Length: 354
Image (cartoon, rainbow, N blue to C red; front, side, top):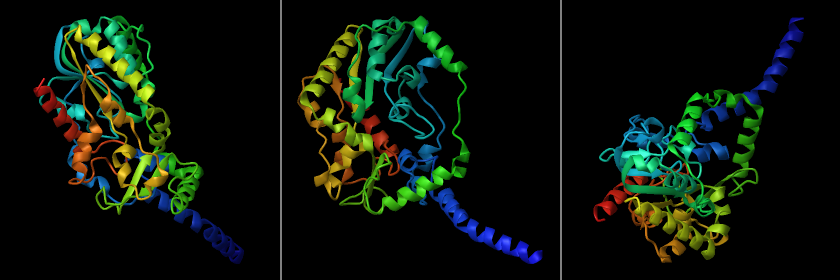
């Protein structure tokens, strides 16, 4: 009986060892709580890359106010009011934002993202309503990530959001329970399978078919200790067909000029910030860029007439790339604290001269 039991234990152990080895690799190499590109691409990474941003990431202070937190029926004054996406809001996965840097020395109000799924449409709806009647605003910052900007420009100029509607939306949001991501993701067999499979494929392909993340070689080291490697989001490429069309970018510009005029009548100056895609910013440094289409969104935008204040984030960052690494996170689609601070300082300098 003992012999049979020993054989059983031996066979079970032999069978289980490969699984535990793979399981251990996933635990130590798959970081779901850091960069979105590592998480989405199931990319193996055991470096402590984010240690260089430790101070900024662990700073829990939020210096700006949110629309959901203020008394909408009380007159208030703000230097900057921001409508944007994940580049604008201080969220756990980022831990900072250019908005938060602005707010250290200025009175800043941010429109919560649950109120602003499309920041362009939300802004127009607010303008048409009575919300801005209760706010004294000097500058309105409209921000969108590059890959979504043209698509977001298709809006309805008749939509209206009033204080009453907004108050109800805020109330509903506060009553919602927030589902936290499960830490048991590592125990899922599908996670282990995807992680192992994709990392093997990344040895041969820039973009495995089932992954939304590209991993390419570059002509220079753009990130600390990352051996000339660039990660970027697949949608950066998918958006190029639309964003490279002059007629579509022109339509966006016409919409922005119209919004600028609507705000001007309320005594508010509009600042427009397209946040350059990581792929666009680093495109020229891709080792085999002949197979990757050049983004032209900023080239087109630069030629168009504007009644708003325009911040070309790509141009600003490109001036620094030759001197500074890590303007974006290596493992994420967003600007790093370095990039965020550069943009915040640019906004401050631009508005000083207005």
